[in-house]
Image 1 (cartoon, chains in turn cyan, purple):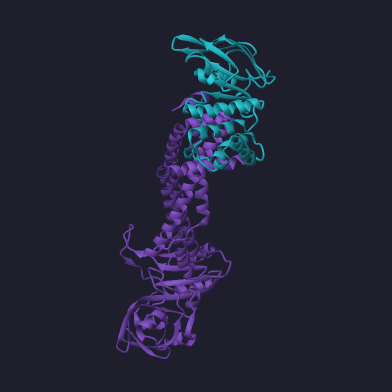
Image 2 (cartoon, rainbow over the protein chains, first blue to last red):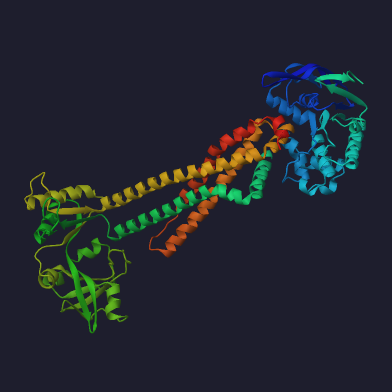
Length: 224
Length: 402
C-alpha cells in the first residue's frame, strides 16, 4: 500500500462552534491506482487532500505514506516529503510568474539539492509534450499548456503519488479531457494518481471513486 | 545552485517593478551618495590644508609678538620682538637647525612703467631654506649683502611676470617704495595657497627692510626650524623659557608673544577632519536607517503580494528556512544595489563639486567599500522581519490567497 490511513480526524474551531472536517477516515490506496475523491463543498475533501499531501497534519489518527508514518513529523521533514514523494497539480496551475517553463519544472530539484536539474526538467517537459515551449514564461502559454508544465513539475522528483486538486477546473472541457487523458496514460505507466474533484465527469476517468460527506467516506471505502 | 536561482528570481522581481524598486532604494541612494561626496570634500580639504602646512616648510616654529591690550580685547600687535631676542634664542635654545628674523609688509613695487602691490619680506638667507623655497634663476643673497644692507632682492615668479613679463628679471632694477633694488634671483613656483600667494613676493635682506623700507626696530616674526627628529614641543618649551626670561615675564603670567608649532597645526587639522568624519558618519547612519525603513516597507508589500508564490514554493518542497533566505537575499540585493548606485552618485557628485567649485574633493575608496557593505547589512537588518513573516505563512492559506 502506498497510503494507509486510519481514523483521520481534523477539527476546526470557528468562533464558539467546532466543526469536524474529517471524522474518522480510513483509506487505503494501492500502488498504481487512479483514485477520485469527490464530494460537495464542505464535505472535507480539501482537508483530506491537504493531509494526504502533507501540507497539514491530522488531529488524530495515523497516516502511513510508503511505509512511513508521517502524521507526527516536523514541518521541515514534511517539506522534504512534499518535495520527494508528492507531486501537486492545482486548479489554478500555480506556476511561478517570471520563470520559464523549464525553470518552474526544475524548482523542486533545486530545493531537493539534486544534480542535473536542467536536463531532468527538460526530459520531464518532453514527456508532457512541451519540448518546444521550455523557454516560455507561464503568461505566454495557454491554460492546457500551463497545466502540462505543472504536471511536468509534479513528476520531476518521481513522487509516490500525483495529487491533483480540481485539475480541470480552470480549463475548457476539451482541454480538461486532454489533461485527464494525460493522467490516464501516466497511470498506465504505473503512476499512482489521486484526483480531488466535485465534477462527476472528471471522476469517471478514474477506476475507483470515493465519496465524502460531512467528513466521512460514504461510498467506495477500502481497497479497490 | 539554489542560491543563484534565488538571486535570479530576486533580480527579476525587482526588474518587474522598476519604479517601485527605485523608489525603495532612493533613501539609501541619497544617503550613501551624500555621505560619499561629503567625505570626499572633507578629505580633499584635509589634503589641501596639510599640503599648505607642509609648503610652509618642515619642523617649523613661528614666534610672533602677542596682541597688546588687556582682558582679551586686542588693540594691536606688540612691538617687543627684537633681533636681540632672535640671537638669544639661537644661542640658548637646544635643537635649532636654523633661524631667520622676519619683517614684512605690503608695498608698491615698480619696474619702468609697470607697478604692482606685493608682499615684501625682509629676512636672512636662512629663511629660504626654513620655508622650503628654492631659487629658480639667479642666486640668493650673500651674508655680506645682508650685513652691508645691500639693496638686492629675490622675487617670486608671479611678481616677475607681473612686472617684467617674460624678460629675464635677473640683473634688472625694480623700485620698492621708491628705492632701487637689484633683482638677483627668482623663486621656484610653489602655487597659490589661498590666503597667501608665496609666488607673489619680494624678498630683501632684513637689514635693509628694517632700517630703510619699513623703519622698524622690532621683528614681525622669528622662524625657527628644528633639527631633524628633534621634538618640536620640547624646543617650543625651551624657546618660551628663553623669551620669558628676556621679557621678564613671571611664571603664571600671560606671554607677550605666541609660538605656533607646525606639529600642532597638523594635529588640529587632523582632529577637525576626524570630527567632521564622525559627524558625517552619524548623518550616514540616520539616512541608512531611513533608507532601511523604506526597504522594509517595500519588502512587506512584496511578501503580501507574493503570498501565493510562497504557498506554491512550500507545496513543492521549500522549507521555511528556504523562504526566509529568499526574501533576505532579495532585500540585500535591493539595499546593496542602492548602496552601489548611491556610491556611483556620490563619486560623480564629488567630481562635479571638485570641477565646479574651489573645494578639492578626494574620493576615499575605503569609504565607498564601507558604504556598500553597510547598505547590504541594512538590507539584512531590515529584511529580517519581512522575511520572517514570509517564512511563517501557512502553506494552505497561502495557496488559497487571491
